[in-house]
Length: 322
Image 1: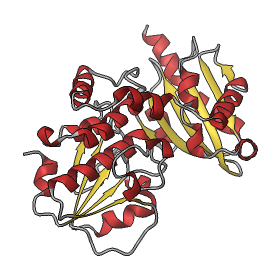
Image 2: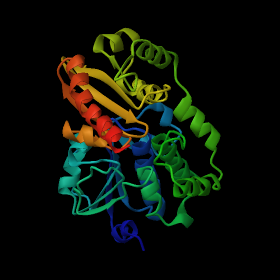
Image 3: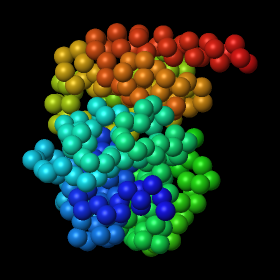
């Protein structure tokens, strides 16, 4: 019996939480957990609290059950936190973690300090969905649950392109596909498809990108006025940093968007050398070795200058080791 199965036994009320600004892995793991718990015990009182997730994930079973405003609840028997690297990333819904009788965190972020009573953290896993799959009774994973898990895996592996993809990842994906999910449509509709405005802001960000450090690094920024002009929200900026990362010769890509005056949300990606998780952690953020983020203040020039110093140190160290 897995730790999750052990903790679910006898539970009459369950609350499921994920991180702020939910991405594919967060949405997939949370909804997979919701569907699994509901099918395991139809009498269980279950609540899923998340900030609104993009409409492109509306095909996932349970999408309409997501609650996005804090409500007064009796303390839950169990709180399961998914894909959230620290307590602060739970946002306002962290109150349910604090009041729950038991808590479990399932995650794959290397920076996760283990903030729940019980923690299942595997930094080598491609995604939280991969970690969660290992905690489930695989015989009970039907198409509804499989679609959620497959969604999370493809989003956190860049459709199996990132270095976090392992043989185990592919084996799990194959088992999920065997349930009969429409995996091609899931990839096309939730990962690659963009609406017109999303395509426009992507084009604008790429056109205004700047390469530095002899072309090995690249950054671009989207300001609040740009977002207002195109009528887009933060969720519409998904994929920009990954597109920058694929440019020939680039080792490290930086994308930032303005959240307030002189305040930026920063996303970083690297290909082979730079540990962006280490850099993000220095500035109060976190993530993975090749994909991480943080929030920084100052002008966007200040942000790039502060980040570039840390990037350069790692690159110089890599050259010295050659």
